[in-house]
Amino acid sequence: MSAPTGPDRSGAPPTSPRVTVISGGVGAARLLSGIVQVVEPAAVTAVVNTGDDTELHGLHVSPDLDTIVYTLANAIDPERGWGLVDETWRTMAALERYVAVRPDGSAAAPTWFNLGDHDLATHFYRTARLREGADLTTVTAEIATAWGLALRVLPMTDQRFRTRIETESDGLIDFQDYFVRLRHAVPVRRIEFDHDDARLTRQARAAIVDADVVLIAPSNPLVSVGPIRALPDVDALLRDRRDSVVAISPIVGGAALKGPADRMLTELGHEASVIGVASLYRDVASTLVIDRADTASAEQVRSAGMRCEVTDTVMSAPGVAAELARTAMAAALSG
Image (tube, rainbow, N blue to C red):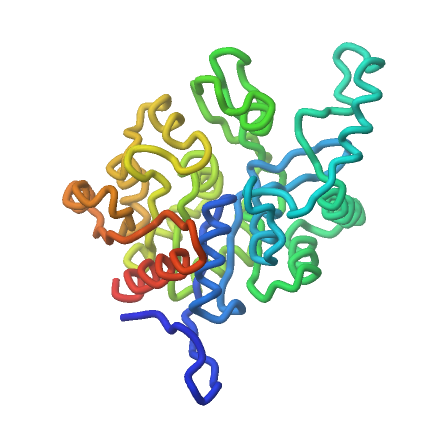
């Protein structure tokens, strides 16, 4: 069954399946940009990892939420894949004045995590609204509306949830210390999810249960999708509808297109391949979509207990993202 591809010649809108995407950052954002080309954006929901959230300069920063919002608003910096296009960095440059006077042990004026001048406005708004008592779901909806988005962008939880990484060199550190400050260049020993009884939001739960299609984006399965799955009942919800859950491999030809997913898989005892991805997802997804570069592994994916679809998954152009979305949704709707 093929997903609708747009309005017919009479101008009547198609009847779109309800699509929920289990989302990390860049890979999920690019997939979502393809999905909204082939179904009505209002029928699309992104349930987004917040394990990467951090506090900098007293501001609540939500990198994955913002990457998705900026990408879908066509405002993302295309070269970096994060932050805003045509950004300026005068505030970060000005902070350098205070580095020399900062006492040892002080966390003031960190300069290792760049926040652009225009991007800061989002963090100012989010932090102020959270301090007024609004939850992250409400604030994220306000931000998405301000950027003109019709799809729903939902944080996975409204409660505090932090991904921490144990490294060989620095011990147990916050995810952004590992990913940004250390440039994810040090070996990983363990991943820990630090939270106080965080739960999936009511809205995110309904989005998973009520969708016609659930897609697991080509995001890092350990630190982008993993935090969402670590919330109570998420795996049970996915297992209950496994036939209509489709995962897209973030590993192509044994390597991650962006970020440390391949190295993390190997360092933590998994196989950095589509077979390794299948072993992580086979209990909650019926189908794995893999790239043509991994065609020779399709039968092994099937032997691991999943159906396998082979197509172009490297979303180097909007048309590729749209075709990948069609393939993944068709697999889910035929499940």
